[in-house]
Length: 219
Image 1 (cartoon, rainbow, N blue to C red):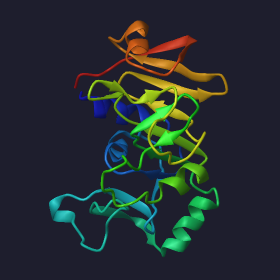
Image 2 (cartoon, one colour):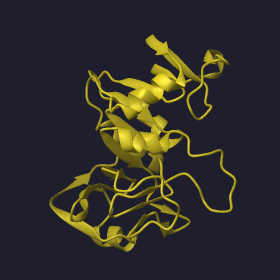
Image 3 (cartoon, rainbow, N blue to C red):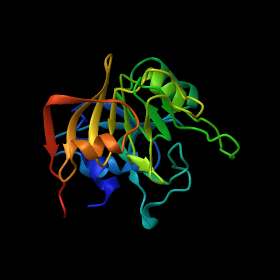
């Protein structure tokens, strides 16, 4: 199993029956492949959709149906479309239970930087700023490092999306919760030692007394 699949599978375990969930583009969308049997959730896209289905296969593409990142997606039979004002009313009104986003950087205080690298062209922040403030739970799903450097820092160096908003970080190496005392490591992946995790993470880590070794399936 590749690192992104490891992350997506673990994030999907956080989904609870009946939740309204918003997924960022890229890795977060993979979580739809690993939702446990008996768990029924509704996916929302901030460009005006609830009941969003999976990313569309070539023979399922409808040019009028895309997610907020411009990917062609399907919509479930019970789905609905509406204007952007209504969509952001759901988000800003606190009706989204979980949002899952990628990140460029996260720090031990729960600060998030995921929208811009200075000097590079980007389309804009999108709905990220509203989502991380409005959702009840914010999960960052990302690879632990980029070009060999930790993405989990003592303090973010890039422009922030929002401050003190991240609840949980899931990487291919570990699961961390943001607490008042700092980053608490609750799970570590099979084959990874605590010493290796600390070495690959710039942020200070608190290792849980009940640390779980997360089995990594190879299928």
